[in-house]
Image 1 (cartoon, rainbow, N blue to C red):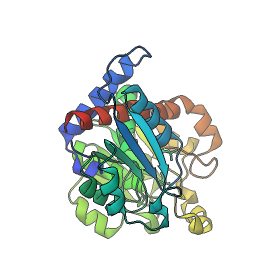
Image 2: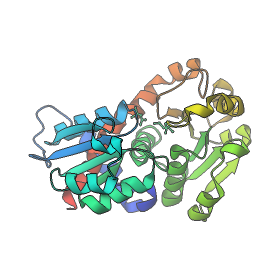
Image 3: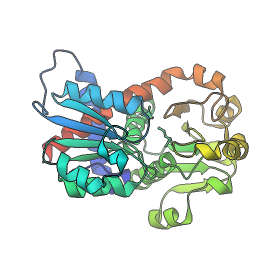
Length: 302
Ligand code: CP
Ligand code: NVA
């Protein structure tokens, strides 16, 4: 793998190998670990949007693998004043060894990879959030033994980055995905055409999505950049909240997952989140292990 731009660009073998390596890195994690494949390197984190988990997990992961993380908020570099991404890429490509980018447009991450020539990771765009999905798959493997034959049900804004990355994961790995969303927030036609044949079903019926589900998944109703639409989103998406009633409809043993940050009593009830905190914060921790596997893979593919 030369870059991680989206789940769309991966195949089942690549995903499976990343998850296996993440499990191994997780089990071998210790302060005295001498496996440092990125020793002497500097990796840039270029972030145009806020982050807690992604930033911290990448900074810690890079440090553990031997590299120096350099956090660059777009507000502090010339990118934020209008310098084109391709110029930023050509400068950084001559100085740092890899880049991790969180921004709005998917094309910015793609252009950065093209113009910089260094390994580039999508740390969330409006189109995809591949790092989150890899952590989620690791959690599925730990909690449910894998994804084969399992059903994931995603509730809320089905046309956001998480819904789209889940759809690609379902297509690549062959597990069932049900997206429960009102018509306004179902994956766009153009996206569905690109996805083509897949085990993804889209419904406005919460009960239908939850039935037989092994994973109940949600995300904020107001993705970064959509704050102006907050009132409408809360009103339209309210019936898609996950709560104890939704859990009752799912398979016995179903896990509850949230990529976080969570907005209590909006997309998930406080009660459900707190009663499933072990599962949800295991998922958050897995960001670190999954991303270390990505970094190792990229380093070894150069
Ligand atoms: N889930 C996730 O990407 O969290 P952050 O926005 O805190 O990085
Ligand atoms: N869909 C959310 C994910 C946050 C991790 C957003 O883009 O803000």
